[in-house]
Amino acid sequence: MLQRAISGLVFVVVLCGAILWSFWSLLALFSLIVVIGLFEFHKLRSTENPNVKKWSILYSGILAFATSVFISMPMQKELGFDFYNHIKTLFFCTICFPGILAIPLMIADMLDENGGGYQNTSNGIFAAFYIGIPFGLLFHLIDFSDSFHYDGRPILAFFILIWSNDTFAYLSGKFLGKHKLWERISPNKTIEGFLGGLLFTQVAMQIIMRSGMIPELPLAIQIGIPLIVSVFGTLGDLSESLLKRNAGVKDSGQLMPGHGGVLDRFDGILLSLPVLGIFAGIYHLYILL
Image (tube, rainbow, N blue to C red; front, side, top):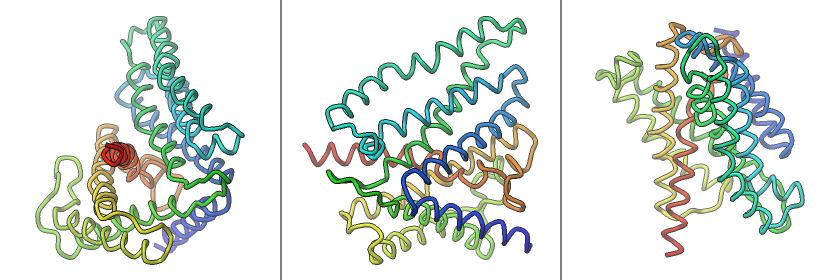
């Protein structure tokens, strides 16, 4: 129990320090986290698909992460690009990324003498969209202006919402849980726990705004962000539980004693960040119209 508490504290201190210190500390930490997460993902998938090559998972995930980070406006500002160049970069990556990602994987599968089908292609694309892109989308949460000044507080606010959902879902489920949420995948999760996490994530959002960590947001955004974090954070947890169940393991890795691996600690962002991106895009389109 003490070991679990110490490793959890170290995790929070390192993560918060990297987020708040600078853009480059954030990039360094999450580059490492992505690589470790991809190794864990390969271990989970190779149990079901022994022909999957480790390089295909690493190549796909790192390419997706790097592309997502590179087209973020803060990265463009750090490298001295202007907005016009950002649009060209976004267009180029959108058009070329699928081909750059898939073609080497498909060639590798065709050259595979073991005849494993398109295992490298399918699992590589899975890794790109399940790990690489979600972690890269974190960098799109950074606020910026014409005179770019790094502010990691929006990213920290996002993680506080994730932690609030996880913590209060656990506590609500432990003391009030009676009805299983999705027993086949995760026997310990309950509907009462899910609703408790949903409620307290909304409360956490209000506390974050009142503290000045993020600016006051329109009501639809105030409600929408924590709702997405709770619903899709839980689905991300369940999706990772399914991967572990299929692989026959309890944890994705042993990075943190008592807490498991990278995918165990960050499963809440894997689906919630892409959906937040879609939500933000639809909202801005609605405002423009």
